[in-house]
Amino acid sequence: MNDFSRVERMDLSTRTTAAIRDVLAGRTRGSILLFTGPAVIASIAYMDPGNFATNIQAGARYGYSLLWVVLAANLVAMLFQALSAKLGIATGSNLAEFCRDEFPRPVVWFMWVASEIAAMATDLAEFLGGAIGLALLLGMPLIWGMAVTAVVTYAILLFERSGFRAMELIIGALVTLIGACYVVELFIAPVDWGGAAAGMTGFQIPDAFALTIAVGIVGATVMPHALYLHSGLTQHRAGPVDTEQKRKLVNYSNREVIVALAIAGLVNMAMVIMAAAAFHLGHSDVAEIETAYHTLTPLLGVAAAAVFLVSLIASGVSSSVVGTMAGQMIMQGFIGFRIPIWLRRLVTMVPAFIVIAIGVDATQALVISQVILSLVLPIPMIALVIATGRRDVMGEFRNSRLTQAIAIFGTMLVLSLNGVLLVQTFGIPIPGLA
Image (cartoon, one colour):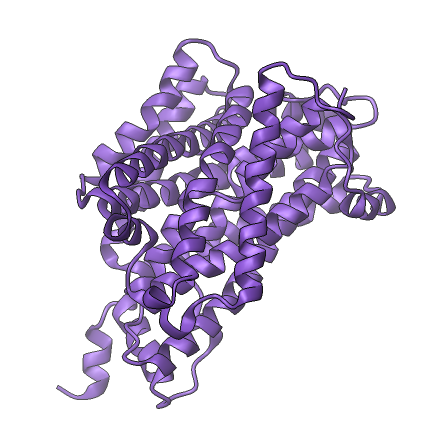
């Protein structure tokens, strides 16, 4: 069999891996697209329905004033996703496996339980978002929207059997669709670009509820499961054989992280800007996805409302797929146990059905889920700072002093926000916040 026939018989993932290895070995000059995939998949976690819920509330109630929170959260996310990818490339282990091997057993069990809670909170947001979008678009009961979302999500997950590249392409297409929808929205909405620019640099928290929204934005942007997932997506993709090849992979990975998360950040800012432009003056009480959809129709037209729903459905389905992938990786990494995809999918979507069954407001459940995520977030952040700061783990890929300092600062920022939120929750007044 000649080389051409052999390549033709390879599946897409095998061909991609072979092409990457040729580039790393210096035999060919490959396209950056060969190395594009892990950060794109991780980026969908930054555009999930939880982002829709928090961003709509932020824009409708506070206009452009919380845009700086979205920007700051996205910058922190870029750093930590890059660290996660670097861990997988440099060590061949993902973050959950590192924790299992390096931390005491009680700590590992605590981290696993907290991560599973985060996975359920994540799936609550993702699953409900897709279901709400389908229910509104097709006029079906929410419970049927949930059933359709479950079926579509499981069907996409089956493509994982074909290798990593098929899933990367599917998620990449959905990311493109979400981004395109919000480009359209910005052309339709009457945006005050001067106000938006001021909101990105204003550094203000107008009141106590704005703090809750700000913490929710952080929880919806820097996602715990994405930190675990990214390290796993890079650990077996190419199989570098020496330090030089690892160095090349890390460089390609950093570029992909910057581009993919910059796009995700722009989509998040576009959500806030759209909500601020459409709802802040005259409709600042809009706090639910359903209300936002129904209000958009008379304000900006049927096209704007339809585009909004298409982006929500694409977000819900794709992020639910990615959440399930992350859940499997977390369970296998921490306790070495893997369950069938259909069972994993069933377990993590049960809370969403319970929420609807007991009559909890769906959008409020989305916002609360993001606050839960923000409370769990410091756990993988601290683990990642520890792992990537150790020379015995990372070798020459250990964080520089500047990178380590910035990573510690980002972690402390999230911990501080969580502390303030807990103080507020227990009714202790916070100076400067009404």
